[in-house]
Length: 484
Length: 94
Image 1 (cartoon, chains in turn cyan, orange):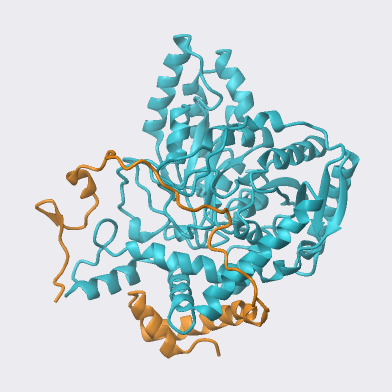
Image 2: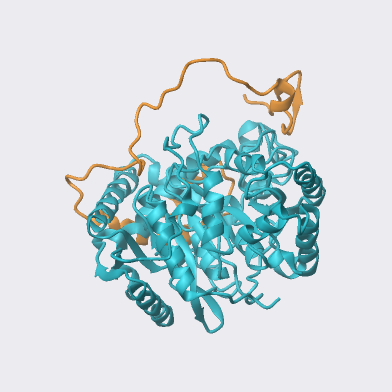
């Protein structure tokens, strides 16, 4: 049996009933990695020995009659943006090529305590800045559906790893769409929780008011299972919210009777590929057939999201990335004549072009004389966008849209045109600006490439969002896999 | 033009990034296109709009003031490019 193809909930049953062992499962996933990794290139680091040792540990627990949780023994890949103690963490950057963290991020720690078997760290756009994983300081990841195309980004490795069955699920981070966009382009489920639901402690910061960790899974049920164990208040992250932890699997109800779904017309307008629009229209009909009331709505200020985002995110990044200075960790030029020379050349050699662009954009937007016109104005526009969402949510339980304006593009196609690359996130960025939860579920294909349906929930409205995503998934019955 | 080559040089200095002349020229062009696009929000009327720094309203997040665990000096220094006597060593400053 090809165990690597199964979901968390299917594998958990087999582990508990002792039909399979955690070690067999881990070996199955590593043999899959051996088969396809050379073509897909999802992983920066594979942690085979650590994984097999952990699988043994889980097997002993099962043999000893201990009860195991739903994630115990499940092979899991982690985006290389999250610190893992003793395991190289590069953030996709040459500047952290040799960095071995001395602590583990809270999100990863939460899952390790649940018994996940970590398979490795996945490739990403450097410092999570990008939409194609082409900005990785190491190599390009390929989309399992078409190896000449990008997997999306910035969590491209975490998306391709699940689509190619090189892990059962994975974690990514989403600042402007970096989970949902690659999930859509790779034909899997990807979810960004409400800002603050998952601790950011140990997540290498890009834009602190926007970053959020979330799962990539093969179905919505797995997404709910992972979310149950990912969330929680953390004393080490003052922005993490204090709530009673819900059981998100209870929200997985296949019924949309009376649920009101709004479709923002601005996210179905020009700029969205007409074939994608047709797939989304079909998805809306399925939602209606399942009992939902679907109607068009409007978010009039959403057209300014991209502008606001490309001021706010780089501004925060320019400040966050000041820490990479060659003093405490990471790369340092060997022959600096003085401190300033060391800073200037360490950062010039350590960072790639996109990171330099964003640092400069942010520095410019925050600099004397430009602050009010750029950063101050962008923060006000952010308020206008939040107000738009609040108005829409007085009438609707969730909003839906395409996740991306196009399917996966060719490697190299947008790499020389930053603005064109940025436009691939127009449907996902507004959700980060408003701090809302969003999920992408597969809803069809265009010319053999997957399309994602984005469901946007209210603040902390994960349960309703998951219910809609689950109901859609059940009635749509997606089972296509890339041929590798 | 939203940004000149002179501006790029100044910003790169502020951000401590050494750039070659060719890079200054390339980045000036690219940043100009991006700022041209992003700068459109300047036209919006936001006279009575409050700025948002964080989407989730939080203020005065406090915790009990007690000593927690911290890294041992050798652990904190484990990734240092250059260290000596429990300190980070850097090149000459002045």
